[in-house]
Image 1: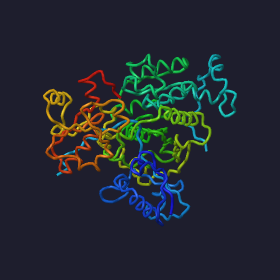
Image 2: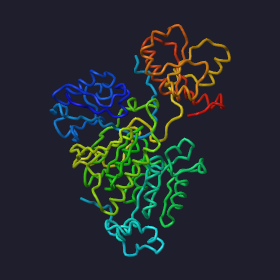
Image 3: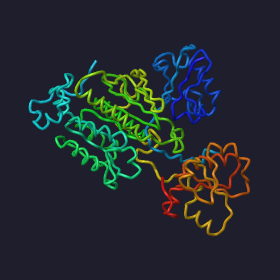
Image 4: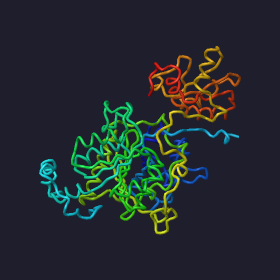
Length: 103
Length: 395
């Protein structure tokens, strides 16, 4: 068990929950459990190939897991994982849909 | 360890008696003194953006006596800026933001120089605009300009005092490739455009940029005077609702495309292409493409002709309360996937939201579910209020 802090932009996908208790012995397992509990988060954390998006930063007890062992970094019950999103500001972007991708 | 941006000021950078009175609360602090105040007077800072973040940054830097402040913005002051952009006022609505800001700053402190750059900050002008300045403040509101500011700072070896805000949360750091990581070390790539929070989840607490911008100004002043511990290699995370401040540790990425020992980016690039989004302000009109869009005047024609259509508004209920069309029915986009059974494939549907972006997403969902007689209201209720019923409020 560990705790994951969810940033504001992703709370829409966790029913507003800010801290979520997850199972797992590694960062990857904890994220897997997180996206099992809240499936809508998956596309925000992982790309189409199932790899963690480069715009998603994970900090384990204040350290960037990219500089530890990435998703294989070990965690324990006391661990606190934090997702730090890439935030630009108040600008509202176009959500123009590419309908050609729907075929 | 303290780090400073500039060399000691030249002998001719001295304070007048008026300036000594003005800055006396600085001069009596042993960390600042006359020497630090002269460094402030000699310093030059470029604020990219004169909005929510740029406002408090510039106001405090001007008050503190930073001698040369550049302001870059291409926009004009609008009423909906004033909830957070405190450098501007009701009397300056309609003015160029850089002119409005310049007049306010010179009112606070006539002893400083203000350069007003009424431009978009782009790959074409950024290096030249930034060149005379010691330090750059990232007070922008979009990803392309953030990457541009970063790359300019790396290429010109300048500190990038970064701040960003979203709803109740803010981030602050000092990216300076010579001494630590750059913005790209932390965020190698922007989020895909479709995953950027939409207007449904957007917004910002008006006071938040005040808090974050003031922290940016603090970092700038520390770097100029050469005191304290700068936020280099650290990212400060502020949550106004929890009233919490956390700091996480950052490291330089050995694979960074611009600040590593083997950079693949050695000059400015096309940042709109890199991010897949524009570096200018929000578009008021969004759509799903010509084939799928309907304009507000076409919708009015349908109403006038008595056409049988089902108009679905996918905004949130609190937005519906601000303004709505009586012909529409509200199905917030979060509820729509669970209510597809309420749609009849034989009916003609028009989907709308505030500006046409969220409705375009929902149109895609409906078409995927086999509901193909569907159009997207281009420009949403903003376009309706602008072009058809000008008595309606616009938000």
